[in-house]
Image: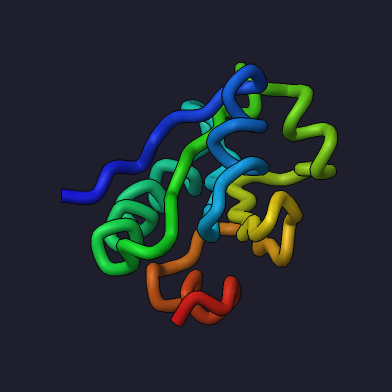
Amino acid sequence: MAEVAVVTDDTFQQEVLDATNKVVVDFWAPWCGPCKAVGPEIKRLAEKHSDVAFVKLNVDDAPNVAAKYNVMSIPTIGLFEGGNLVTSTVGAKSAEQLEKALGII
């Protein structure tokens, strides 16, 4: 079963920016209702796309990373490749909508 790892300000560089594969980052917070709805969708994608890493970053616990990538609304889901944010989408979406929005079909 695929895991959705938790990253922090301290581990973001290693787990996301230094990764050799694509990484989808779920910028979320535990008090955010739409974020809770997206969580299971991210897990579905992680199970389907073994070639992509999926991680969650709590914006309350990791404000530096959230600020660096101008995360103003959550949930924001970003696709990183080669250490760069390639694309992102804001709002609760189904796994299929996320695949299309992020281009990971």
